[in-house]
Each structure stands twice: as structure tokens, then as C-alpha cells.
Amino acid sequence: MELGNQKASSNVEDRRGMGMGKIGGGLGVGGLVIAVIAYFLGVDPSVVTEVAQQVAPERGGSQQEAPRGAPADEIGQFVSKVLGSTEDVWGAIFKRSGAQYRAPTLVLYDGQVRSACGMGQAAMGPFYCPGDEKLYIDLAFFRDLQTRFRAPGDFAQAYVIAHEVGHHVQKLTQKMEAARGGSKAEQNRTSVRMELQADCYAGVWGHHADTLKQLDSGDVAEALNAATAIGDDRLQKQTQGRVVPESFTHGSSEQRMQWFKRGMDSGRPQDCATFSSGSP
Ligand SMILES: [Zn+2]
Image (cartoon, rainbow, N blue to C red; front, side):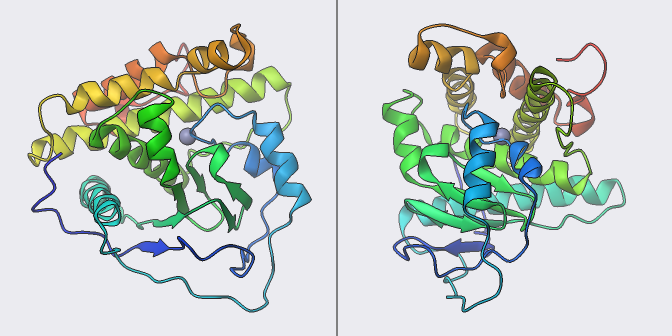
């Protein structure tokens, strides 16, 4: 990526090295909402729900303030600039449709983090919490992306951030559908549609970042490779040796790649209609 001219976002909370337990969550969000927060990786949402219910968010109490603003270190600067780019792009898109974009906050943490949605753990991968409108990113995941998932490259990392920002856009546009009721299979289908839409929104951002000359040749290939690496079929094959499509929560490698590409090609959020009939 070429982010030299990009202004770094100041909507960053650096909780690295702060440990956990001192930062109160505040809002109590029901477990069902947790189930559709849609973690980036193929974690079974019901597992996450259970974890969230066991450790209820802290209410009130003393809160330690995390430093706000773009961190000075290289990776901190990188994520802040990518976030800044998403703010510019989505700000312009919302403005064109007569709306105002409310930027989310990106929280950098290590190990474990307390959010308005309950406890977050690095093992779950990056996530978005609609209750506090924050994206939670453990930088160890970027290393995993490179080594464990064999998806290197700065644009692969940017795609992860843009995907979580995509969930925030869903919240702002009321597309975040709670998978309430229904069978497990139906809930999983809703989850897949949400995730693929977030992939498509990441592509929409990528399209405009390209227009702003922020992409290098090879960047799109990095994102497509990352999308493939974290498809449910690929992950299931790696972890359990077989593929069970009914249990997909994020979509197959092919689907994730296709929807990212669709957003990347068109740059229009309207083209990310994963909830319309026949899709995905
Ligand atoms: Zn997601």
C-alpha cells in the first residue's frame, strides 16, 4: 500500500500492554447480539455467546483510560492510516446519500480485552462490537495471517480492518440482523450473509483506496489470497479434516473472494446485496 499521504485517524485506542480487567465495558448487550457480531474467523458463534454470558460486561466502576490517537510505532501508524482511509471513503459515500458517517474506534490490544459485548480473546480473531462501535484488533492476528494462514502483505491486513469497518457500516445502515430464533442452520445462513457483505464492503473501500492511488500492484491479489485462506471450507478442512457447509458462519473461500471482488470492482455498497433473494 501507499499510505504516505494518508492522514492517520485519531480514533484509535491503544490498550496494548495494559492487561485487562480495568477497563469497564459499560453497555450490557444480549448474548444473541454477540452471536452475530461475526468474528472474522470461523469461530462457532454459539461458543462466543457462552463465553460472553459467563463473563458479563463490567458496569461502572473505575476505568483506566487507554491512550487515544494514532500510536507512533510503525504498525500503529499503519492501522491508523488504514482506518483514516476508511473514514475518508465511507464519509464520502455516506455524504453522497445525504447521511453522515459516524466513525468507529479501533482498539489495539494484546491477549484479552473487555468490550461492551463481553470478553474478546485474540484466539477469536479481530471483531466488531456494535454495542460500543469499536473494532478490536490483536496484532498477533496479523502475524497469524502471514504464517499460519499464509496470507502475507499489508493489504491483506488492511482488508481485515476494512472487513470489521464493514460490520460498522452494517450497524449504521441497520443491516446488522440479529440471528434471533430460527434453527441453527438458519442462524448460520444469516451469519454468512452478514460476513460476505462485510467482505464486499471491504472491497468497496479497496476500490476507492485504489482511486486515491493507495494500492500497489499485487495488493488486490493479497486480499483475495487472504479471503481464500480464511474461508470456512478451508479452515474446516485444516482443523477438522472435513467440510460441513451447514455449519459455515463466514462463507466459503470462493464466496469470500467473490464478494470482496464484487465490491472492489464496483465501489458501490448497493452491489453488496447479500441479503437479497438468490444470494449469495
Ligand atoms: Zn466479520
